[in-house]
Length: 438
Image (cartoon, rainbow, N blue to C red; front, side, top):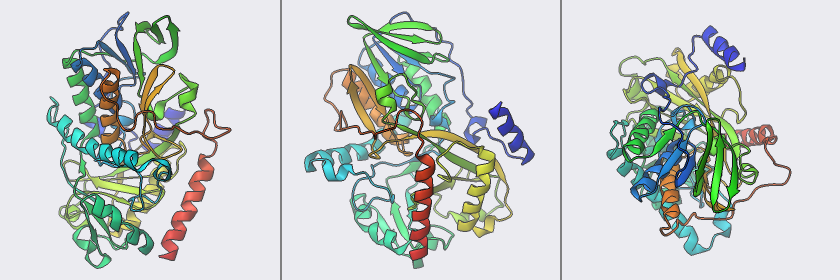
């Protein structure tokens, strides 16, 4: 009923709430039957789970991927398709929100985590090159706009560490046709792709490697029986030796310990109608991916055909009608690009991302069950890589530096993220203060 009301509300505004990416690569059910037994069950058929399945199959393991709905319906095809590497560690983080892990990890482990985060970008570029479906990947570089002089001053260390460079406010029109920022930085090792085509390319590659891909098979329970595990699903039971949970923002109460450590939150994206000829070249002259240093950040890019502008943001972390949130996002877009004041929005949609309390992705094993999740809104490369590394760990290969890092939660949090409205309001005030203070 709620979905129907959302669709009606959007239709009244002339906006489609179907992700723009699905027009070219819609979700698909899998014809694969549910096997009775397998070596490994992967719960979650997104970027993480499919990359894990490919690694496992190449290591000689039988693997079955369980997807609760159709392949390509979850957040892996609902994101902006920005490809970047790194985690929110260090004084020079491009985000105003940084992980407290930088103060607790030993220096050698911190360096190893950073190195693996950087390696995620190389892994992604190698992976898209072997897919049977063109994901429209392009190494475009990324521009991060500073919303205050203090934020600009803080970007220097990260720009140096990532091989990037700073762009002054006086020179930023070479990068972006806007005066909304106090300068920024360019990170060359960033790119963009079509997330739904990437997902379906992974589906095709995993199937070609021999993985069983079972759609509409939500995992309902996990029970240990001797040396085996039995997963009961919406399509029946399956017995296996090992399990990987790769559900990110869609993690339910299958494992309460895990659910207490991930915070599902909404992210919203809009896409404009095709822009007038020549306008994209003035607004985004280098056709990069773009973000800013707000805590409730904005991010944007051209669509692969270069005709539309995709704009996303954390206007709120709660689930709301995307057609209503579209008005807020459109206001943000026009504040950056006043020339778009007369341009209409054609698509508005939402997806569920997963935050963690330390703003770090997590990979490890608890009570004999492996997990890889917690993208904190930046998971195209990172969770693809951690899915691969999870598969390698299950093949008993040397573990990742991320393996079994401390995974915190907080008291009173069980399933419902009751604190999200407070968090959204608090971060909104801090963003306003940053901008006001200059």
